[in-house]
Image (cartoon, rainbow over all chains, first blue to last red; front, side, top):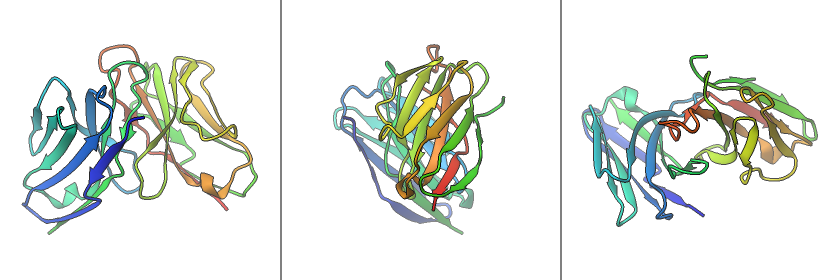
Length: 113
Length: 116
């Protein structure tokens, strides 16, 4: 079955610096890749997603890149702010069938003021 | 409602007891998912409903776990003879179903289950 690996498990950056989180997936049929942010005591919230027909997508300070050949996708956060501190999860899914997500194990991001 | 609502937010029970966790999805969303999140881990898929029927229950760990969605809206996750290993946050998510954006899941805040 599908497996999603996520690195690093923890990441500390200085405020204003960039943060990069990387994921790899195993199922070549996966074609939808969302990223979720989870704050303490809350459910995961979608922050950006990318479909397999696109190599990069950007939304203000957040961008996601996808390399289908290598089965890699990454989250890039620029000009980090303290409120970016949270746990980030990548996921892989297909746009058919059950659409169930396979999540990575999460990255705890700490932005130091 | 405006978001996915889950109750209770916290549930403490004793080993061997029965528990029910409720999920109220976004109005109009036909697809509903249950996930389980253990401490320090990503959410793990349990079961998916399209309308009233369980279209995929491959993630349920054993027959102590069961979920229903009798009217295609609210869903209840039921756990019999709870074990300490069942302690986790149970997340519910919904999506528009078979329409555009069907695979964009919106999650609730979760129900934290602690089995003593």
